[in-house]
Image 1: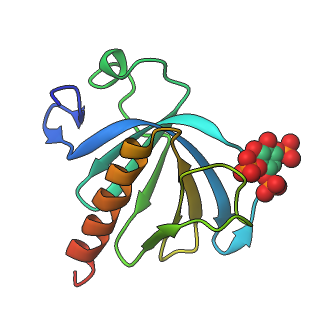
Image 2: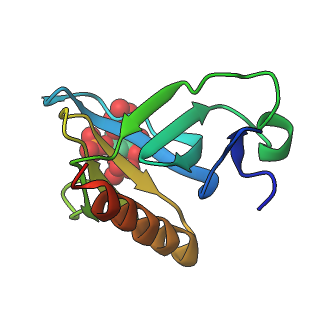
Length: 128
Ligand code: I3S
């Protein structure tokens, strides 16, 4: 997708709007705060920007930095258990630094694609 980049010089493999919340920060439990979040997969990084309505106006727009970034190297993904969330189609992403996220979409195919993309990224970069 042509709109799927962070900066023109940094094309991204994948981007889209997902529901995202942190559940831990450096291993400590934090209060959930689900938010509709622009998510960009770029190399081994996952970049987030909250509160943006439209991807095309935002990517390449005036926001030059992501609000939040996680490094996928050494992380893991799994489907979240019912205890973790009452929502459907929830991915639990764990990072090496102990910041864990839940990532959700109502759309089956969307969340399945993300699960695959995140797993592949983690596997590809695990030896680096
Ligand atoms: O795991 P929890 O605490 O049941 O998560 C729910 C809460 O974060 C709730 O907000 P407050 O209790 O802070 O008002 C959210 O509205 C819910 O969406 C959270 O649960 P789900 O099952 O949707 O992840």
